[in-house]
Each structure stands twice: as structure tokens, then as C-alpha cells.
Image 1 (cartoon, rainbow, N blue to C red):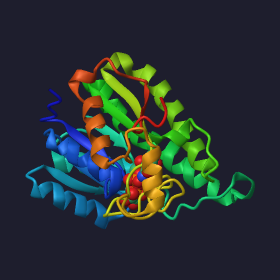
Image 2 (cartoon, protein in one colour; image 1 turned 30 degrees about the vertical axis):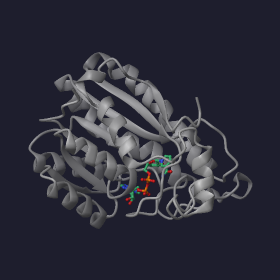
Image 3 (cartoon, rainbow, N blue to C red; image 1 turned 45 degrees about the horizontal axis):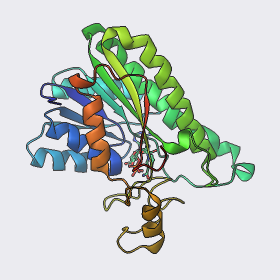
Image 4 (tube, helix red, strand yellow; image 1 turned 180 degrees about the horizontal axis):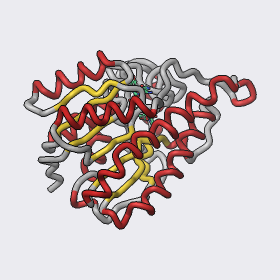
Length: 268
Ligand SMILES: NC(=O)c1ccc[n+]([C@@H]2O[C@H](COP(=O)([O-])OP(=O)(O)OC[C@H]3O[C@@H](n4cnc5c(N)ncnc54)[C@H](O)[C@@H]3O)[C@@H](O)[C@H]2O)c1
């Protein structure tokens, strides 16, 4: 089950954190993986680690908010891997240098960064691969979102949450449009993730208001947050990777258009 041999996958923002975990999981199931990141050195590092395990992987450094760069980057990755993208995971979703602020003082000059990345960036990547997927009659798209996309908080991440909510809506519509073409489109809405040793994490991760810095074994605030999660710990990239593997498998052909909360039971 869940054999991805012969599939080509593109994971955005996979130079660290959750995206790197997703890339690892897909590669472990046999997929060839294009590792995207805005920061080329991060993409290279993930590729090196994958190749060391015997996987087939190439770096695909581009900015998902730049439509032309996305199209060129996808074409280059497909040429390097010798086949079209069958699986897209839109994981890039944390703008570089993201800051938290209550909405009343949230600088309007910053609003577009969230929408550009989470809504338009994801849309660019989907449009770049969907024609091919529909033409071949098979494709899998997984959107990584956050509980903040459909649950209000007082964390000062309103525009981030709104951009996640926006892309969750986009996924529902696209899923319906391509359902008869053998293409599924689903969203995984993540809860609190553990800090990753190889990266700063996200707004609701390490360094963020609901994911303080430091490993959960030693940071009291993080330990406290982890205890509030029903299963008693924060999420790990491999938790997300496992869920993605299911969603992109042949076996998940009847699952589409869904927003699935993956959060240790934090909301049920
Ligand atoms: N960390 C958490 O607690 C948490 C919780 C809920 C949801 N999420 C979601 O999970 C996903 C991954 O989060 P993470 O914590 O691993 O993030 P991260 O910041 O650790 O890594 C994301 C990567 O995306 C890259 N990136 C940023 N902008 C990009 C762009 N324009 N084009 C290409 N790459 C770009 C960054 O360089 C970085 O390497 C995001 O969509 C985030 O919103 C994270």
C-alpha cells in the first residue's frame, strides 16, 4: 500500500521543517522528489539528505509568489527528474521574517505578504501542474494549512489565518473542478508543531506565540503547550509526512476537497 514508485513529487518550502519531513516521507515511499525552497541552500541541504538515503531528489529553488519563476522552476524540475509532476504539496506558507501583531495595529503594508504566499503562491503552483495532471488522468495535490485558517485566535496572526482560510476555500473549488479528471486536492490543517533543530519554524511554531523556542523537553512554556494537546505532544514533520503519503496514494482516490485537521486532537 501507498507505493509511490514512479511518481514525481514537488514539495514547496521543503528546505526545512515540515516540508523537509514531507519530502522524506514521499521519498521513502519511492517518489522522486523536487525540493523547492526560496532559499537555495536549504533546498540543497534537504536534497543531500535524501540522496544519502538512496532517494532520487533535485533542488528546485524558486519563489512561489513569482508566477513566471514557478512555471520555469516546475519545468526545470520535471526535466531533471525525467517526468511530469504527479504530486504537488503546497507547504511554503510562512513569509520570511513574519511578525505577530494585533489586527488593529497590523501594518497594511504587510498584509499582501501573507496572501501572496499562501493564496497566490499555492494557486501559481497548482495552475503550473494541473493541466498536465488532468491530461494524464491522475494527480494529487495537498495543501498545507493551519488551524488558524478556520479558528480564531488572539495571537496576532490574523492575516496569516485569513490567507490560510483563503487557500482552504480555493482547494474546495479546485477539487470539485478536477474531480472527474483523476486529480484529488485536499488540505491538511496543522496544529502546533515541535521546534525543528534545522529551522526556525513558523508563526504557530517555534519562535511564534503558540510554539515557543526550544525543545519541548526543556522549555516550560512549550511543555505546557504540549500538555494541552490531547495526545500530549506537539506535532512532528514525520506526522505530516505520513498523512501526506496517504493523501497522495492511489488508495486515497475517493478522498478529495477535504480540510483535515492534523493536530493531536486539539480540535475535534
Ligand atoms: N510550524 C508550525 O507550528 C505550523 C503550524 C501550523 C501550520 N504550519 C504550516 O506548515 C507549513 C510549514 O511550516 P514550517 O513551520 O515548516 O515553516 P518554516 O518556516 O520552518 O519552513 C518553510 C520554508 O518555506 C520557505 N519559503 C518561504 N517563503 C517561500 C517562498 N515564497 N517560496 C518558496 N519557499 C518559501 C522558507 O525558506 C522555509 O525554508 C506552512 O505552510 C505553515 O503555515 C506550521
